[in-house]
Amino acid sequence: MKVAVLAARILLGLIFLVFGLNAFLHFMPMQPLPGDAGRFAGILFTSRYLFVVALIQVVSGALLLVGRFVPLGLTLLGPVIVNIFLFHLLLAPAGLPLALVCVVLEAFLIWAYRRAFEGLFAARPTL
Image (cartoon, rainbow, N blue to C red; front, side, top):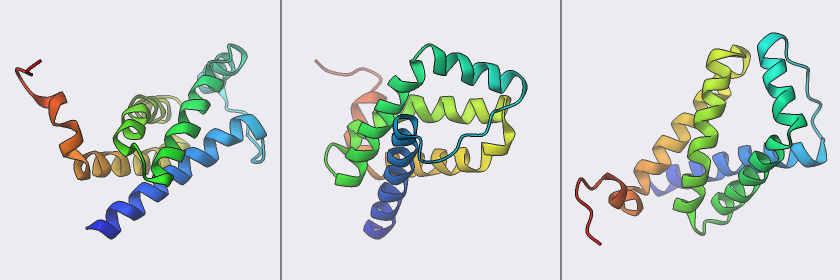
């Protein structure tokens, strides 16, 4: 189990560190997206919103790779992964397989670190 958690943590961390850094360093060529997906991505880029998301990806990916504050990294990545999944599900289905891999890895790691998330699922949390 520890090996699976380590492998999932490193894989998810690498995915987000590399793709997050790509937004700043442009070492992987980006293909223009057709239709609504291209317009949406263009708005994210011109508004600089994409750079904030990329910064969150880099920080979260680094936290997962280092193995410190992993629950924080998973928490920060949660909304990013949901948006990536929905973007590919609704606008650009070609990227859906990698988005699904990220969803599965995130869900597995949240389950593996479930003790850190217990308070989120308490019906009546104590102060």
